[in-house]
Length: 275
Image (cartoon, rainbow, N blue to C red; front, side, top):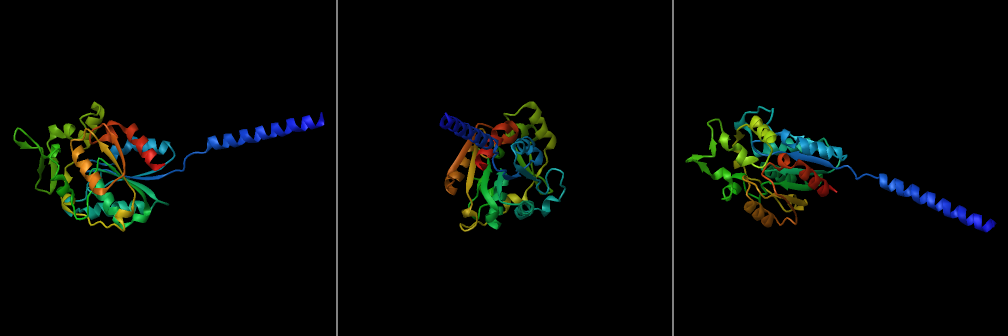
């Protein structure tokens, strides 16, 4: 009988210990990641609001960079270069402990490439979201010039959709902004894009990036394709992915402004990429 009781006690103790360990394991949360989000041309930090909130809700740290000459920043457009944008992102990263997952949208792809060349050891992954992914020596203008599928090269009633202003900014026809950037969005987010629209500084489009295998080439890259994109066509996205040899590729059936059209899907993908 005494032996039987000891056996029961041993089983009970083991059961309690197992339950306790299981409970502790269930409560373990993924390690927080540092996301740095870089918006693209004609846009501003507001486009990331919904994605940022969802990433933070998952326990991550999120920094959204406001590019000079965008959003609330009134830097004179003629003073801006691609390196100005690069340095703004580098400064934001310098204030973060640990490595970052650096996400660039559209023009942001040029910027994060230049950042990776300068400080590759700070970056865990580069994520290109509907973004320009250059080779060394290329500018955004050079890449965009090969994109026959982009609406920015079209015209309406013989009026070009994209024009240059005297102050050195690029403008999109007002009645084409929704179709170009977010044709699949709700009326609410389409109005948000219209309300926040500003002409885009032109000079950074012409600045080439110098990239090396030792720096830029050493950072892991991920590309998120946008299949209804009217700015960076799926065809150009495919060519840039192939040229860069990107192995990890996802796709979303959305417009160029995918973070506004489907913020949940973007947040889920970024979380997956981070962990």
